Length: 343
Image (cartoon, rainbow, N blue to C red; front, side, top):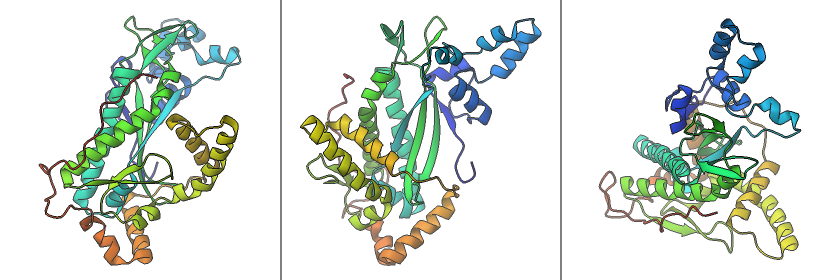
């Protein structure tokens, strides 16, 4: 798609499909793997089988990854092709990435990429399981197949560095067979994966650039969010247009939840309510623009609203006085104890 980098493959499960990490996701592969649960080279495999005399139906079934979609649909069930894990940077880091200099942008993007890899590896190593016999049997699945897409802005065109990671709902067992993932277990660990991503990314950026973090209350009464110290709240609010749109909807559905359950939602419940609020306020996508064009527009927009002094000072205010930026800077922020994988 114009203005956006191509999708890339990731995961240990790629080897079984003849793919390599970092390889571009083609439109045909997307349709076969994530749209039909078939091998990415299904066209060639099917053609060769037909040339060898195989029946058309048998040739097509041979390219499937596990239970065929047609069989699932015959049972009047809806096939689940993939799960979308979306990793987005903290609001203050997005401001520094959008309005900071080239070095700052590179550090943030590198930390973003590394933190996603850390979270996905954790899902592979500690969370992912295959299931069969209607879910009664399970086994470890330390080899996922993931397609990643990088996006730079939200639906209003404001900065929002984030990646969509589509985790294929299939994993290969040691005997070569493909089975569906235990999606309930994956959904139970969505918040944990996002937390690990945030901790990893923020730590690396703080170490590289010599920054500090401070807790900021986003929702009254809930756990504060760690943001980069010195980044003006007005700039954070300027970039968070989607949060402003979602706030009244989230308040309404949270109030409905409290009336029904007689308690506030837990962390997973808040994640689910946030998802619904996002769906209710989602606008139609616009034609993507190149990053350099977006950056020019973001800077102009911020200057018109806040003045050049505040925009140019978004970086200097974040640097801890008396500290140098760059590799070797002291760690000003320490993550809590390791995440638990228990449901």
